[in-house]
Image (cartoon, rainbow, N blue to C red; front, side):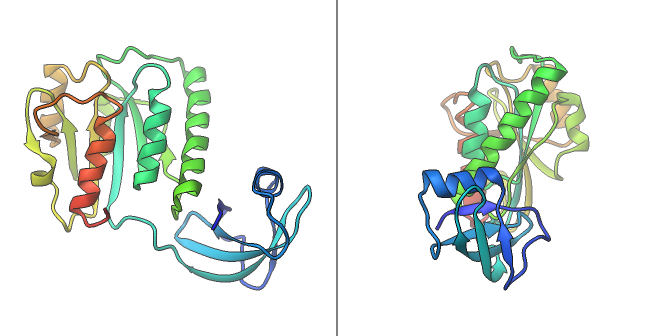
Length: 240
């Protein structure tokens, strides 16, 4: 069933609700849905609404039929801390991390980041990334849209990460499956850019409590590592 996100607190069972322009255009022109067909609305705060289309046109209106807690969100909240990669790799990372069930994505700059956009460029990029997260959340049936946070530096991460936070280090570490327990409910994952982390950065992260982790003997690309890491974490916590 098609899914669309709406602001929290706006929908109520038994009422008619007008959808925004972008959703209306997608429903009427792309999906070619008609009055009487059903779709799901999510308030992004844990509640899903079953709705029926009342009328189409420039604005699509629906009637809210029922409400229920969203059952698609992982039990564990995972936050991905991703060093800026080159090109459009971050777009792919955001899309796939959202599909897997990440709670939030925190871009950061490390010593070996080649991409170093200025504030204006990064804000435009972040807006696009947030839209990609929204579309991926709708497509994958999420109950919330992960927040793509503002760019920070590596040394700002300790104030932002969960108590249990891992980082992938090419010079060694323990397996993710050994570091994450089935009852963990909040896990951070730090992934470097194409050049990984310098020894000084690794020492800093370890000194602040991050756990050095490995995904095995093979070196994964910076866009592959977060997908693999999140998959293992969510598998360990019972969500995959």
